[in-house]
Length: 214
Image (tube, rainbow, N blue to C red; front, top):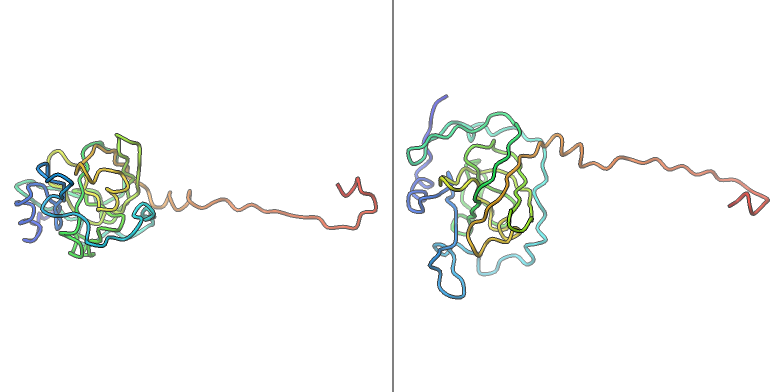
């Protein structure tokens, strides 16, 4: 399989941040943020973010064809990554970071535009697209996100979540948190997600006695 290099925009951002996504490096909060809060490289929310981000629904797993180009072997910062080209069980624990408005509207590795308010994520090797459940180990909160980007390229981080997904897990302020990432089989999810149909029948008749009616 041929190894490709990540395009210049992502590479430059990765080098500058030392921990980026293929086309969108992670946006952790700076440890030297001023009092009152401050995001890494000013990568926080827009001036008027949507109200009630907690109400944004999780991604809904569905069967999709794998991306034609986003699952090829590639190299970043001297490391080679070989994405999965088949859907199989995956589970890992490690640090999750997030990225925000500095990359809002820019292309992801899938070619889709990054939406910081959608329930998406970047992963170095999981298939694009695919779905995972991410659980914060410190508070038990979990979200379901759709993988549509590559990264993070930092040895201690395993996934980059969108701004909203990180908000729902409660770690925007710290920039990263330990999580468990578990793959979801869309086909099984679609089957299990449908409630079984129940058939109800009624018998109608004229009854002369009240006790028979009961």
